[in-house]
Each structure stands twice: as structure tokens, then as C-alpha cells.
Length: 275
Image (cartoon, rainbow, N blue to C red; front, side, top):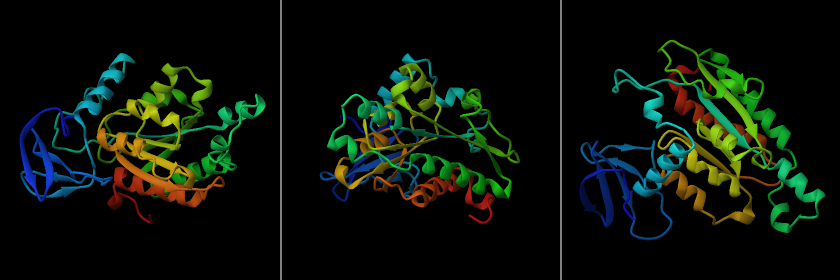
């Protein structure tokens, strides 16, 4: 399976690691075996960049293809820029995928299992409120502002390019895939900047994240240790991936801290005081 971006310029081998370079001079380094994280390097300048980990031309193309089937345009077309050399500042959408209604249904209909039980969160409302408060606190310096997309769902797809001095909208909402049509699920995930979810099948929706422009935060209980498939999906589509180890009673601070770290990266640490 081909790895890297959609078009290659050349292929080199360095220190027993395969380097695929695309037409922009970026490459993804693949160790020959084992579960190793890939590190993006510049073929032309030899400088590292942690914005991407791995990329697969097939997975990347599949994401674009399935996004297209659901009417989601390529991210670059939805946010055009007159000057590609200038980093674009856009609203940030943070989405939580909930299992609460799925678990409630399973309990009511005698469909409970040990596997379902170890992934049942006992304090999900507390986690959601912690994330909301964490975003509000993060935006206290005035360079961003919090929007509760649960109260204003139509704002989710509003994605203008912001001026240098504009305050960045940071939106947060949660959905439970159990009670939403597939089109609605794709609608939300397809416009998401940071996706947060417990390890589970719902993370398959990450295929619809904008390739190369999103972050996945996966919450893992110890019982699912060693499951790397969603991590691999994230890396193969050029996303940032973070894993947070949890118990059934989630350490809210650890999740909020991880979200804030990603906001620092997206909004810009130099723009936020007191983080």
C-alpha cells in the first residue's frame, strides 16, 4: 500500500526507514516493522514538524471520497485563501461522541456485557461541563471566545477565514450516534477540528474528519490497551492523535488539560496569556 501524500516526487531510504516525499517536499518516515510512530520530516530542509505523524495515500483518498459522497467539500475549497503562505485562522469545533444513550438502551433491553461495562463512563456530564469551563477559562485572555454549539447548532458549519486580530470562536457540542441519522453524524464530524471519544466503534466516524486538519483525542480504559486501529487511522489521514488513559470515572482534569494543549497549538501559544 502506498504511503505518504497523493503524489510522490521521489523515494529515499535513510537509516533503514522508508521516506516518501510528496510534491511539496514533505515526507512521512515509516519504520520497517513494529508499532512505531512516524515523524514527519522535510525532504528539502531536513527539519521536523509534529503537525502530522503518518499519512497513507489510500486512507487519505478514501476519506476524501466518502466525504464527497456526503456532500462535504475538500477542506481547502471550503476555506479558500488568496495567499497560501499565510496561515489561516478559522473557528475551532470540538466534538464529544457520547455512549450514554447507547449504554442506557443496552441496560434497558438486557443487552449489557462485561465489554460494554468496562467502557461505561459514570461521570460523563461532569466531563462535558469540565470541557466547557476549560474552554471558557482558556479564552479568558480575549484571543478566542466560547460558543456552545449545543445551543446554536447552526454555527457548526460557519467556517470563515478570520483576520489576524479577530477573536477565534471555539465551539463545543456532543452527539450520541445512537440517536442520530448517519447523515447528521457525518455532518458534525465532517466539520470537526478536535474529536473526543472513548475507544469504540463510533470512532470509525473519524474517516469523515477533514484530512490533515483535525485532532483525535481517544480515551482508553486499560482493558482496551493494545488497540491501535483508531490511532493508525488518525495518523494515516494526517491528523494529530492524543491518547488519554482513563478509568470508568474519568479524571476530568486530564481530559481538559489535553484539550487545552491542542487549543494552544491551534490558536497559538504566543497569543494566549496565562496558559
